Length: 355
Image 1: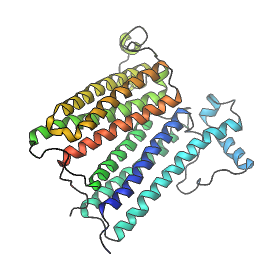
Image 2: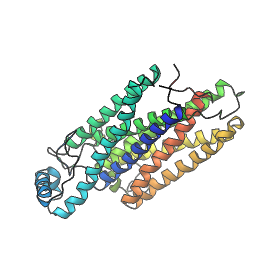
Image 3: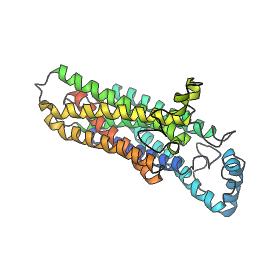
Image 4: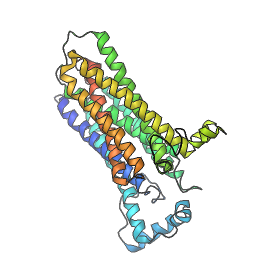
């Protein structure tokens, strides 16, 4: 069998990138609409078919009624309202299974037909392990909200979301390599200059991931509703837990909604500064003219993302804007990954299929 060209593999990986990005958005809707605890049971195979009869709906609703979320928060919820939140969690879980199919079926085919190099096999094994961990974290997260609290653990939510973004990063890096684009800059540029840009890009990616994980803390605790002025928090720059200076243990701090919002503010501001400097340095470098538009977009989008975060805070976290904020982080991360891949390979594409 002739070797499958990289552009066809790029189509496969590109499809999975779209699926994962969609999953992030669906997950955001699920969280923002408080739908995540509506399905009380988890099964790898079962649960694919939605309830079609009123009796089936009543059975599921009765199971939901014994959860802490219903008993402490949604005790007056009707069956009609339950159906609405059930839809998003159901779609979230089914979409995860579809991602598994779109990833594993082609992978198994390519593996059996010996269309993957040793490097590719190692990469996809790593991606598979992370994917399984992501599935486990989804169950582990939901389980934390079905026992004695009406909310999932924000630590588990953060791990679940961050893992999704890591999967996105790995897929996108692979996809960009498969495209096999031409050199993005003059070959005369020195390795020293490339390394400086690469370090700034890498630092930007790391900071953005940490900021995203802290955003999950805010979402998981509804900390965005706590202080809705900016840059102050009430009458102070710092939250009350720091101003009062009592019980400043890490456990207490990361369970305090004031500190969690402050933590996200500080990280977001630091990330804004680092990414903007990265974009500015890239635009100023005459050797990176072919990448200049990416650096321009990076600077513009990170400012828009930060501004949107402030607007959302002042408007008490509207769902639509919250989703755009999550999508904005994906856009900024995508631009950073394009720049990372281009600088990492210096225009001589290091393809995963190379033996």
